[in-house]
Length: 252
Ligand SMILES: [Ca+2]
Ligand SMILES: [Ca+2]
Image (cartoon, rainbow, N blue to C red; front, side, top):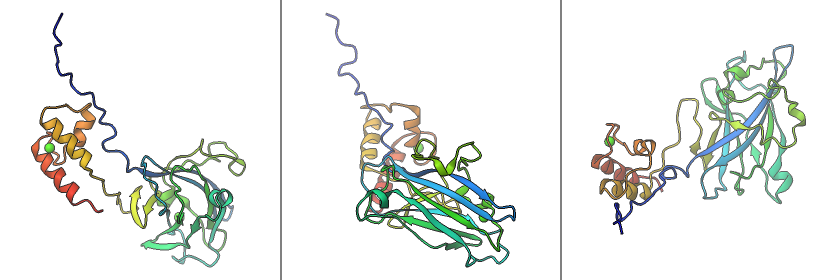
């Protein structure tokens, strides 16, 4: 009988999950409804998603927009901000989303915030729709609106926006619409480039130690690159030291 060559067999591991579990993001689509006068509104549809298994019932999302095109550089009394559909309110007893008035962020940038207090909205596939803009006296130009960037316009794509029943099938990831948990950024990119803080876990520490001890190599080059915390193109004990500090200083 031929002896086993690699005894004990190297442990098969999947490292793809090691850095996941903290991705929160909005998916959605929009439709522009311009008027001949240059005013108009943007119709918006959003869903909240995550790969986290932990239910969060303190989530809100922010839609950032610029009023650069407004002559008066302030939100006019005629500003249009109107909920058109809240699926949670329709389908879940005693729960609903709330939408804020426009809140000043900085310079010409404002945001509106939609919150689902006490309801775990992420991955619920519950739709929220609203319209934002104005008809008079200011113009409405969504091309300078931070959160609008990268969104799919379904009217442009040939769909009948107002008569879509489901919508999940059209929704695309909107990286400039931000997600917050209890006011802390957990998804998306804010207008000044701020992204959510990375989450460092003890499981990553254990995994890196195993690799450094020669017990099991990383399953892929991509996985290995994630562990190069000091960006010197090597994964070694120095990275273990950096990761240990990151894990310890992780906000609870
Ligand atoms: Ca604008
Ligand atoms: Ca390194």
